[in-house]
Amino acid sequence: MTNQTQNWLQSVLVYKDLRMLKILLLGAISGFPWVLIASSLSLWLKEEGLSRSTIGWAGLIFGVYAFNYLWAPLIDRFQIPLITKKLGHRRAWIILMQVTIVLSLIIWSFINPSQNLALLISIGLIIAIASATQDITIDALRIEQINENEGKTMAAGAAMAVVGWWTGYKLGGVVALFTAEYFENLGIINYWQLTFLVLGVIIILMNFCLIFVNEPKKTDRQNKQRETDKMIIDKLGYNNYFTNIFAYISGTIFGPLISFFKKNGFAIAIGILGFVFLFKIGEAFLGRMSIIFYKEIGFFKGEIAIYSKGLGWITTVVFTLLGGIMAMRAGTIKTMFFAGGLMAITNLLFAVLAWTEKSELLFAIAVIADDITAAFATVAFVAFISLLVDRTYTATQYALLASLGTAGRTTLASSSGTLVDWLNGDWGTFFLLTTIMVIPSLICLWFIKNKIQIG
Image (tube, rainbow, N blue to C red; front, side, top):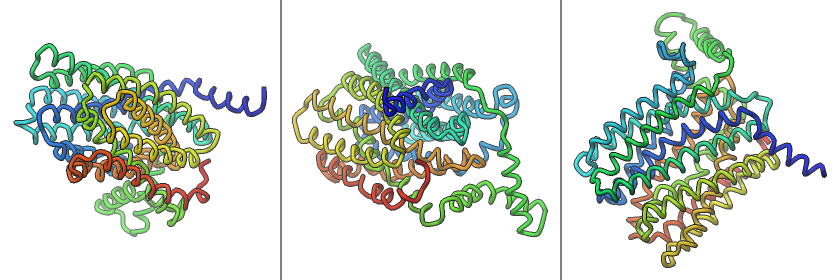
């Protein structure tokens, strides 16, 4: 056996670590809420007769993911009475947020979108906030499962987190679409409302699985955060109620930022932030409108479920694991350049699909290519920001970087429906524009590639 073969085998064997299975579960818990407020909500609104622009702007509820870093330090510091002592700090927060999501789904089951759109979107916003809050805890718990000196294991963990996320999202989507179609065929008028109740049951089952994910030993994170507060108070020269509040707020919000800029230097830090913000904007524009595109060119819910969700899940799992191995072997930077090129090619495939007649074969090829791209891009991105965080601010810095990436994907991509309408439904040109959107992020990455040391 050659050395190269042995090295590849060693990379594959990293996935045998028991921690990978726990990270897989955490990823599934994180991905499942997106079934509710992404594809399912979009299709629900479409079938209720709402416009593409309305559906696109409804996606602004995803914007809360861009700001969850603001309350991430509170998630680190505040312990939930009674629950935390029984379940642990991280798991207590996850379960509290999932209970909030289930209660929101129950309320959704009584709402008619065409009559109470504002209320429906408001409940969707609550689901998004709960999901974004649980993600803070899940990401911190995932990173803390792995030691700081285990770079390859972190890349493997990133791959498993992505597999888990897509498992929750894709298979959850299969359940949602087939359940909705089943209830619709039975003649049930409020078939989407009933579907959301079924999805709520799945969330409850996920809570029971959390008992298998143990929390790591207590860290000195909170002590170090208090040291930062004390340093600020010492700088102020006063120690009273108001300076304590000021120090707490300053330490929780600006402490992680100061640490990040000190570690990387101002210019490189700005380059990193620019790349993180821009990297997946083109993919987000495509993703936000894809299910509407599938519907408009004549595909049924069952066909969308098979190709986009079921087949897509298998593709995503396989290529995410391969992406993890590539990140371990070639490094995250090269993997992200590779993924960026794939994004551009994939978006062009969708343009070709739009300019031709309905073709199941071309549809399957485009969807598979999109899933391969998303797999490589996401695992590299997650590994990239996971390796950048300071363990003193695990939750806050990861949430900050992840939120910045989400900001680009959600705030800008919310105009995707308006862009399609402005183009008079010219889907081909729309997908061509999403291809061009890939370029700016790769320019940022080119300038910082030799100046950051993450492998």
